[in-house]
Image (tube, rainbow, N blue to C red):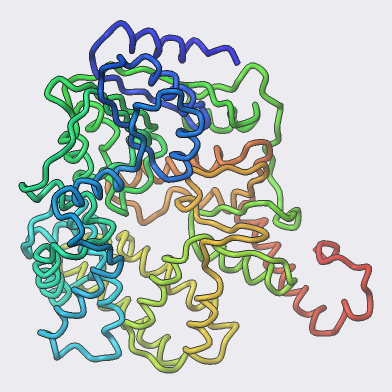
Length: 514
């Protein structure tokens, strides 16, 4: 395929200058092809490192890359190599390191009831991860600021446990977890970095503050940095990514030359036109198919389709609907289910009625905490959104079970990272993926009413762009009113099933009832 004018410009600038380059690449713009081409222009005597986002991209790059002298790896693999070069065979990976340190820290807090300790095993490791992502100091003030930024529902006791657990965590140089792979090389002065003349960074909008420092440490004094990203796809601020990562990383080594990559080769014409409402600079390829964007209903669902939504509860409702009709599906994201299970454990409830009562207590406690901090509209605070979404999912699922044990088993079954059949996913979990047909469920609930901070509002609007550009050919938008009709249809369907309609009429398909 002949390079676009954007690609040609990037190649020329890279060859004619020695400055850093920052490429703004829209969704589906063929950035991998561009990066591979740039590798061919690196001098033969130069050392170079390519930091890819995940292992699947690495495999693709290694297969297509003609320059075998370029090191291609994830940033975590690069960090792990640095750790091994310093500590050698004395170290080992322990993905449960945060949980282990939480358990040790809790030994000094015997007043915490046993039935509520499950909450601490969930929230403290999360705090430890965010502290390392942000190079956070181990102080009450710093952790409280972190909690405010990330909307964590924690109090004084959680802060004290986190401080103790963090102290234990950083002292342990024999075991390392995923976050340590970056944090330890950045903070341990005894670890030496391998320096490079050229460093390439993909998905630059998703790096944390700690990762920024790691990349800076990888560059020679006159090393050159090439970053590729899309600030309109920055949606992981809640998980530790720096909300300003795209701009900050572009200028980490001085003022970078900024270049666009604006043609989407993934998406059909009509899907690109839909995306242009949010990102006007995106354009479609000259030979792109027409494609389809329409309002529709979930009754049009087919095997292999995806269903994306901003919120979790509609996905759970849809899953139950599909399950009742023996249509294979899963909700992407095992850790989401673990988070909901963590909340259930926090309540310590042993019955469904008791669970409802304790969840109400959790809401009231959070409201009081927010009011005490001087929050003007505590009911609209993002912390309330996180809690409210989990509660809504629990309430929805409790209609299907009779005990807390059954509830936990159902939650464990719903969420998975191994998807067969129809994939249901939050927009966050679908980023980086693509599919021929995508159902965009409830686009009218974006932006969330709980988004109050400027970076949160911006990332809310980015979600629409990300959801739209997951579709290669067909995008079907299902609005609130239509979704309600499907729910009513679902209730009718349950009635028919209870009366053994399908046992009498094998020729009737479930969609005919809608």
